[in-house]
Length: 194
Image (tube, rainbow, N blue to C red; front, side, top):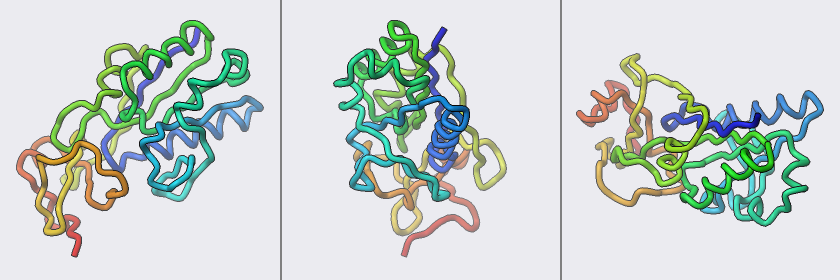
C-alpha cells in the first residue's frame, strides 16, 4: 500500500538534498520518480529543485501535477514534493488521492513552522493526514537539536515578526534549538550580514 510521508526539518537540514537523493535512488533502480514543487517557490526562476550542496533536478510545478491524468501519474513509482510547506489544504488533500486512489507513494519535504514559530498551512495539513511523519535533523550552534527557524536581520538580530514567506533570503535564516531561538542567540560566531 502506498503511503503519504511528511519529512520536515529546519532551514539548512538538507531536506532538498534528501529529496534529490530519494529521486536518484528510484531512478537508479529503473523506477520513475516525479519531482514536484509549488509554483510559489520560483527563487531560481524555473522549475528546478536545488539544494545548498549543489544537487539539482528539473521538476514540475504542483499546479501541473494536478492537471495530469490518473494514468500519467500512475506511470511513476513515487511522487516527491519539495517545499511542501507552501501547499494549501486542498493540494494536500489531492496528494492523499494520489496515495489512496492511485496507489502511488508521495514523499513531501518541507519546513514544519515559520520563523515566528507558527505552522505553515501545508505543514499543518500534512501533520494532520500523513501516514508517516519523519524529522530531518540538524543541530544548533550549541550542539543541541535545532527545531526552530530563525530569521535574522543584517545586524544579526533574530526577528519574530514580519511576512511569513520571504523567498530568496536563505542567508538570513538559520536553524536553532528552542532555547537559543527564544533568546535570539545566534551563537558566538553567528552569521551577520554586512
